[in-house]
Image (cartoon, rainbow, N blue to C red; front, side, top):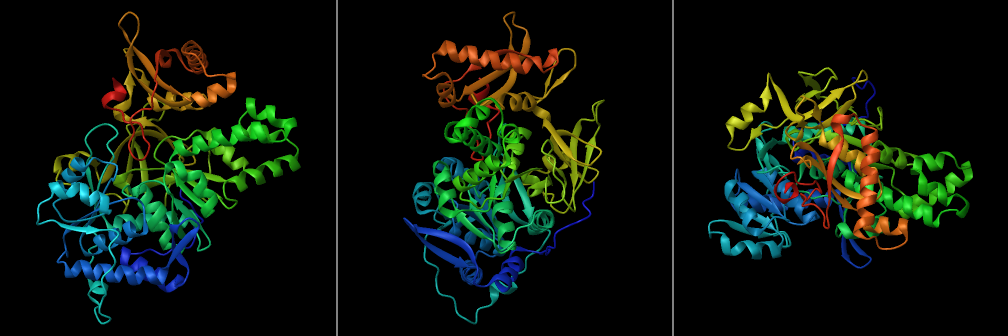
Length: 550
């Protein structure tokens, strides 16, 4: 399906053009809202952002960093964005995850052949003992040096649209991370495509939650926002999200499904406990959308208003990606007056390939191909499921220092995503799972772990789930589920802290219910209940390796 109606958008050739154009268009509008104390904020306007970009970029040139690799490591902040943009302009930005150990950070810095590291002060102190004197260390908290008014070098630095400007290492849910080489053309193409189908204006504000070192957050919750004249605020931490939403009152959130699912559960629990007494029971036995459907119009309106007020009062859109999102959650938020636009993409596609949007919405799919992207299904089976292939200006240049992996991931000009899915008659894409995660039965049947995990996670009492190959009592191969229950939810339901036997019985009941809706070959035969969460990446994806599979 080709979207015929599109929002008006500007196609930029590079970050500098985008920053300068936004400064001209939006001048005194706030680009960033920065907390400087309890209840106190500093605002950086679009004009100020441009001037500080020019100042820091010129400083990088003075430090002989033209054409060099520059690592950027730190918490989400205005300073991070500023250093990233300047690094990508004068050389190559290498965003590194601040949650890594200092040793792993150092390995990425060495592997990327970085000439400089821009990082938070505490991270620099951790890295300093390992780093040679040739490597330049710059604090993200340093005051910018003065720049001569007549110095215009940064305005004319050559930016080749088809050369690597960003080197980003994947989060590695299944093992060793790869270095993905992205050009500014790749990223700007994605900004342009997304702007055409999701309307963002200078009246919008986002609360940045996910790590900026990943393309999902950096492209869609930073660069896209700055191209549209909207404002960015930063969450203090994952634990402070609820408080920060009330504090900053964002209109847009860019999140992963786990966060939205948690929010959905909390909203439902709050309504069933504090909603109109006459209707509380409906929210204990039905989803939010189903329960609201049966209520009088006035009651629906009151509940919607209270829920939106608890979320700051202004949220109208959540952009969701990174994993599968239950259609029930999408429908719940829609019933509350908030769009949850699920999309699909990868680091290698900078990141978006498909998405629900202003002109196409289907709660059960990940949407249609974004403008400028062509999707196809390779070697589909009888159900139409095959590997998803993609082509477009947003597709990466290749993998860093790995020509073999690069060659293997392209076929006839198409990028091989490694994901399985199918496309319906409307052109909507449905994701089944990763090719390498598929469990093949002795009879040759395919089981997609992500499908079973999604069914389990529909239950409020299950916090996390992982499907893998296990062994039955006779030692034969079978489908196994590892479950981390939501103890708070279980406790609230049964009225006391559950014993192990009660949790065991509850999980078995849920698995039996899921099995009854599945063909026999997909049945979960054994399960294990965990006492602590799974190991995850910093984007909250469960790692399918290491101790999680033990």
